[in-house]
Amino acid sequence: MENVGTLISVAAALLAALSALYAKKQAGAAEHFNQSALHGNRLRVYNGLVNYRAHIGACGMGFKEDEVWKFAEVAELSQFYFPVEIASRLNAVVENSLKLLSLNAQWEGDRSDNVEKLTTLAVNRQTLMQSIHDESGKAANDLKRYLRANSRLT
Image 1: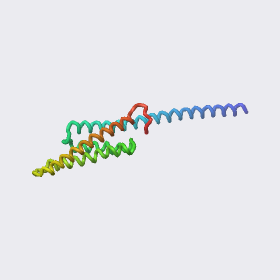
Image 2 (image 1 turned 180 degrees about the vertical axis):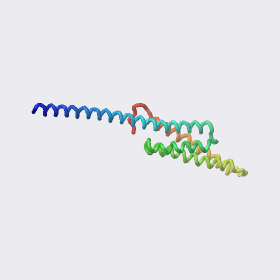
Image 3 (image 1 turned 45 degrees about the vertical axis):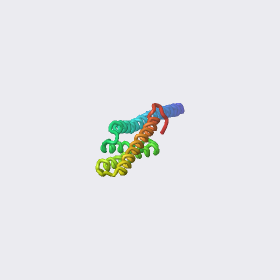
Image 4 (image 1 turned 90 degrees about the vertical axis):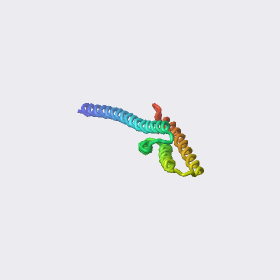
């Protein structure tokens, strides 16, 4: 009778060890899945930025408002997948883009002969456009660090 008890104890211990091993393997698979999902969402943000940069590069000052709003959605998502500094940089690009759209509307609507006012408006537009270009480039470089294969940045 004692041998049966020992046999049951050994079988239970073996079953517990196998269960622990299986649980560890499942945890590893879940971690891999989570990392893949995170990478996919980060890549989506990066692609949104690349598309936006291509649009403003192609259109210059005449970029479209709907493109800004599409990029604003991407910038909003970035706060969930990247550090706050990167999300803030992307949101600054959106805010500057909206300011530039406002200046563009002023530029189109202003028919005055006031050369000084028009010159100031032109300089402000150019400064904002340069800022958008520079900040989006810096953001793209920051995002790439988090997209490299086997990167352990969080």
